[in-house]
Image (cartoon, rainbow, N blue to C red; front, top):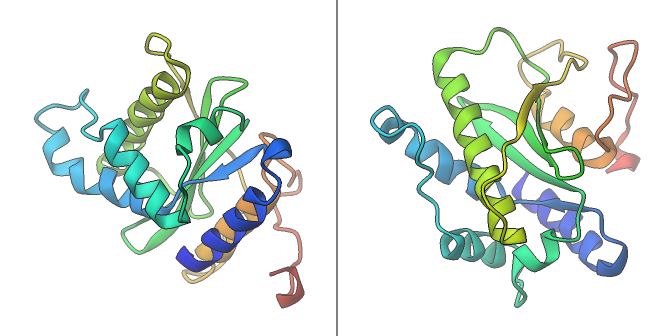
Length: 185
């Protein structure tokens, strides 16, 4: 996932003037997940700073520019996440102030997953503040009804398809994932 998202972002960065999507490295989600034990004591306090986030993203992409400056012009910001050996994706839709949870294995969310969702929501609300220098904005957390994987191994493929196809609206009305081949990747 790390290499693929880096390649996808490299392709997006080639045409920054028309860039509408930004993919944050999964190292960001790893940072948020590492905070989870501390959130039981301070659940409303995201611990990542603007400087730490800038370092995480810039290092992953080899950017000399401020990632917030680039993200300011993007409509959707993707955050592929691996938790408990399962890949899923958060997507910030800046136009509609929504944070989507795109999950191909969305059985009932346990308490730890719900805490992670809330922590990611708070981090993204903070990013909106960093990007726009505005007072804290509130995001709506949306659990999107998506096609479900049929085995325990395909979650990464589903996330790659979300990165490729998601534009803020569900494209899979019949609850099946579109066919793909190695040519698509």
